[in-house]
Length: 331
Image 1: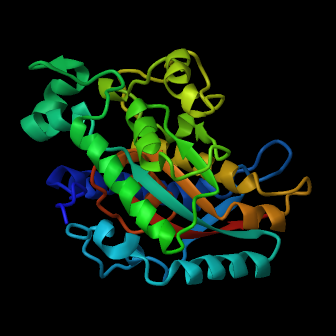
Image 2 (image 1 turned 90 degrees about the vertical axis):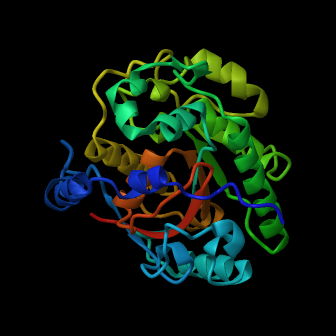
């Protein structure tokens, strides 16, 4: 058995557990403002609230050491058979009131990109000081929109092999696939799911799933036309990219609070898409769309976990965390 390439580094740990002041700031903002805000029609702007459902995966348990945990060697961290997981989530959705829905999100991080090698080689201090704003250094091209390294491609292939094994054990192929517009995430999805998912399950490219926006040149995306040329041939739907050029990228870095709001908006749209014209959960849709795959970034996954009130968890480049969540639509 070859050694896993999905081992978290110290930088991965810092990405997941760094300054937690903004986490607390977002939590207070949600509690005191966002959860109560209404539009001109008197409707809640963020009607869905979210909570983690325990008992399905080890990663949600506080006793699991996220510095050393490797989901590849732990059947993705599941605490039950896939048959039981699928059956229980199906039953939960069937029995849920018309304002409640359950989903299992597979939150995948892209494989190693060339920007990651720069951070690992020269350190965070040099990255913050000057390297973040460069696209080339010491013969390495890492921005804008850097590619996967050979290791990054192998990490995605490791996930492919894991999914192949777990599917044979009953793992569900996700019902929907969403991906960041940055090519390191798109290529990770392509390699991970090559030959495993049916072509009818189209990956949707979503601007809201991109990495923390601004300052770091590696996080500036390519144009919509280039992204469509690269990945349209694999069936990727790029309609979710808002502008042709990356007008969102500036010299000012998006805060974690702002990114958490962005990810909350994605989740609001995801859950609302299963509602009928009266705003009630459509049972048929809720059962058809239980399993959701996203391919994004370290900062994006941290924002997901923050919005879901999940514990902080270290994700290696190429890593993934499954989370069962309950969404409740408030009036």
